[in-house]
Length: 367
Image 1 (cartoon, rainbow, N blue to C red):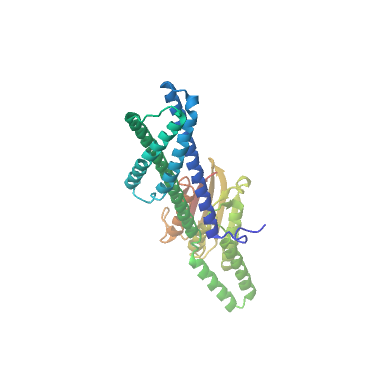
Image 2 (cartoon, rainbow, N blue to C red):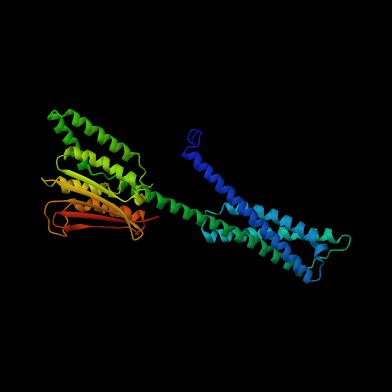
């Protein structure tokens, strides 16, 4: 099946379709309101005339004719009022009042002609008091309809404003998530390229070629991800394994990696690359800052209705509880992402559990 773009529905065309649907929805709402309004007018006047002693069945044709003409007048008023929707509210109300004032005598004259036809051949005297009541009633009907129409349009404008604000918030959130997700540490790329250069100069072309392939595979996978769509934990760990495979080429003689993942958490969905800055910190401030063997260990489990991800790594001997300068940038990145993604329901903690052993713990709520 052809895609929307192939079928000629690009962004502009899709906007036009959405606008046409919105206009059709508004027209249907106005028609429903008009139908309900004039049906209510017909029923209420029938009851009032019956209370006043007029047979509602005999008077029905005249009332229907009068309402039909009033409906034509309000249709014209509605078309004119639609042109005032960009005006300030008080000007819209004044315009609605002026249109109602202009439509009232026309409707009153037509009502009198309908009355003359209905009572023919009996005489139809023009009673000034009855005429005044008719004009007041007509004015209230027309102005009432105008106000209802403006309120309906105002409700549509509010709903549209809310939709736009929601779309802007979602777009801003998406942009923020993408910016945070794609904030790959440039030191990783620089160090990897320098390591490739060193391997080539040493004549280890096979190792350099393997490192290039691993790096390209890792970058290809990360660039195809949508940062706003969660992925299974197993897929996230596969990505981090690819990243660590690149780093292991640099530190193969002293970097040990271990994953301990419970079977019941592998399919839990997490934000993509959420572990990336944590492992980058572990490599940079653990393996890269020491001369001896370094272990990087991940443990994933369910605990108290949440997914708990713990990453531990050896570091140079530090005072327990301290954090080296610069280590907080990547962790703030992760904290910002989970705070945005889980609306404050997730948590990140980090620090030295003992000198030389740094731990980062993510607690993510289960969907």
